Amino acid sequence: MKKKYFGTDGIRGKVGQHPMTADFVLKLGWAAGRVLAKQGRSKAVIGKDTRISGYMYESALEAGLSAAGIDCLLTGPMPTPGIAYLTRTMNAQLGIVISASHNPYYDNGIKFFSSDGTKLSDEIEHAIEAELEHEMVTVDSSQLGKAQRIKDASGRYIEHCKGTSPFFMDLNGLRIVLDTAHGAAYQVGPSVFAELGAEVITIGNEPDGVNINEKVGSTYPETLQQVVMQHRADLGIALDGDADRVLMVDHKGEIVDGDELLFIIAMARKDHQGANDFGVVGTLMSNLGMETALKQSGLGFIRADVGDRYVMEELNNQGWTIGGESSGHIICLDRTTTGDGIVAALQVLAAIVGSKKTLNELKKGMDKYPQHMINVRVGKKVDPLASKEVVKAVADAEQRLSDKGRVLLRASGTEPLIRVMVEGSDERQVLKEVKELAVIVEQVFK
Image (cartoon, rainbow, N blue to C red; front, side):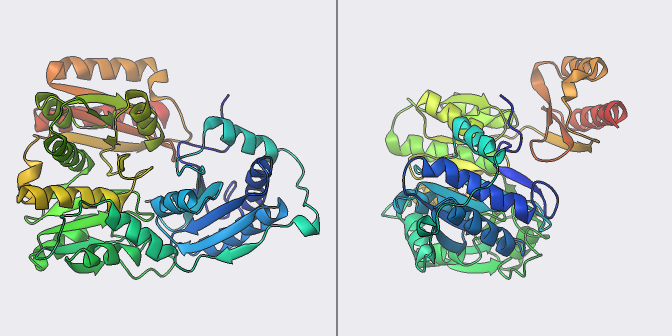
């Protein structure tokens, strides 16, 4: 059954517009609380990024949960994976993150985690949506939920992140530029790497409520590239607004994307474990170069639909622990329960320290195929392959690329966009094909 509000990563939208209104979020908190209350007395951990609207939604969720009889533990600004960790370790029944991830400040969203620190099941999300259809009723005054601040939330998460790195890892001598996107990791991020011995130069760490992701972070690595070269740093690390994604920049100022980071982590695990009995889950967007390099190394590779929810499902199906997306959303289930930008970066740093190679050297283990994507804005969410004209155009492009490339069209899960991606061995041909396809898609769905 199709969900009315929940997308692939919670509920998201423009601040003040349905469903991201204060009254809806109030009722959403109540509805989630009603589902929790069926399990008995429960508590929820609530965190947020640095958007100014977070104050409003935090209060609304707190009120809604309290009305349903649920206690609230408030962390203030905290990376999304930090909430997943705290929910699990503080024996809470629900984790809630107020964030729109890499989107601009005028968007916001609500993400949920289960007591295990994983995304909610479809069953629970359907149950919450069913409660939203009912009239809001407040429990008896004696049963109202209480709220309190977790004063040591940051310290707990910092120690967790450091604990995911190998005991031998010493970052002394490494100069790192860290871009926290004026987001949720602006306090905890620098502490993690500095406490492990690195010299940390931090940028994007002055949030004002409206500058989150603005020309900083993993969606705008150009700023990080400049600062890495300016300071002659060994590498740069770029997180997004809620710190569940990471991209890196090597000492030459070259971007190292999620596919390359995933490859580096997988190869380090292989070298450490000395076995080839595991594999990597990528997505439909993962670069062919990574797939080829992994298979040549004797590792398995499977593509899931785009979205960390689907990567996680496939990891569980295969019994593997490493997976992720080109965007830098990397999951290391042998270290944590969800995508974590800081934890993923630490795994890459462990590979650098363990191999005594630079990030630039490690990424050369795979040859990236030229890949270009154009986002075509449409009036409403549509299936791009519902048009015979588009299907024919895709087939023609694939025939011209032969077995040296591929084409992918997909609708964005969060915005009215169609993503047109072409990948192949010849960059000039790739650019030509993606531009022509984008024009056809725009004409058909304008």
